Image: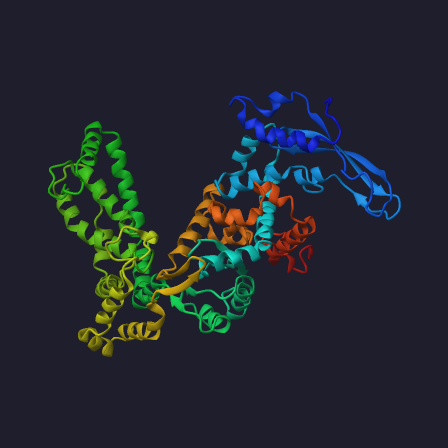
Length: 602
């Protein structure tokens, strides 16, 4: 394709002008409309002589195929000069601001890809189509690579701004460090930290497991980079507790109320809950019910009056309608009741176990449905043979299962009393993990004190180890549960800050990270997500923080300009280190490498 010539040394000016003005064109215009043929832009060093006094000669010229958001692909005629005396080399400053050395795609394209992937949760194919509209041809593999480079550049910009961030925290009166980690199965443990006041993600690390020495090293880095925090909030992990004592001795240190309740609830209920889950699986009752529901749905699909009746029921006020007393078709009633039993998990509040207990809810609904199903079956003239009640009867006659459910329900009453006292993840709450627990800390402390001093519970604790352990946990962490307001000094004067009593800021953070990955990749495996995720990926959450962006841009108008200032040697080193961390082979291939006689035919 022939090129359109543009005057020498104006390449950067041309592209910059196009970036500023392209958006002002009509919405139907595209870069390809401006340049039906690939343009040729010229780039050369500005210097006409060397600082040593020597003259400059042309060292080499080359033509590179580059791409920018402003005009799509273009041919760059690049000139490099050299000093005749000291042999110092000179390159085009303008070109270095457009694209990284040995790269095809400009910084603006890398930022576009990075924000599309991590900020807007677009998948590779969607990004490929978006760039095609801008006259930019790119492969899915190149998109993936640019996404990785985006994270590397963002992490380096973050580290180069540590002094400014430290000053920012000083002006706001300090920072409150929230720590938490997430993992699944054999995945690495991703630990991240956020400042509660500014909501800025401060740092991240991948650990093989949650152990004190590595967490200590992680916290030492924070102490060096940002100074000592006003306070810390974290879970009850022994490794975190030990590391915090080592690095931040004397700093106010608080346990997340949500994690505290979760730990107590597991001690009270987890063993019995596992038993319920195992018994239900052994009976295979869910498989039986799903098959029955499918059969009745097929009958209804072939019967228009039944479908109309079903729709009328769904259009009614479901909160007041009693299906057990309704004069409705038996097939419709059975379909609705069994579906209600199967979908018991939808009654959960989003807190997870031990706050939500979907297996117990399933058993409870099954026991409520059984007598209604028996009565309905007796009144049926046809299709009653499809409703087999014996499997349900076997489940409900399982005395070990029944006793275990009863014990869980009794202990859940106690657990719910403590939840209510602590005003977090309450039984009838609807906020899920968005519940920050804003009740006054003095009120909560008084309620928990009343709970702890209940004489009836004290007597029960004498004979029930689970109750006794619950009280021991409350006593052990008492001082870390109730944070008084902290007075901080700022240039504008003194003010008080009440540390959040939950680490939900981190729970929500990890939930958003997982959701964004699953949205763009469809991968539901947290293990695979954590294995492939670059360690500094959580920093993308800062892109929505105006104060943070102002700090890391360092006077630039956008990330593309800021990234152009970062030393390419640091980028290459960071990419090399990341490759060592994530590995170049799938994890399961490690087993293959250990087989010494793989090719032995004998």
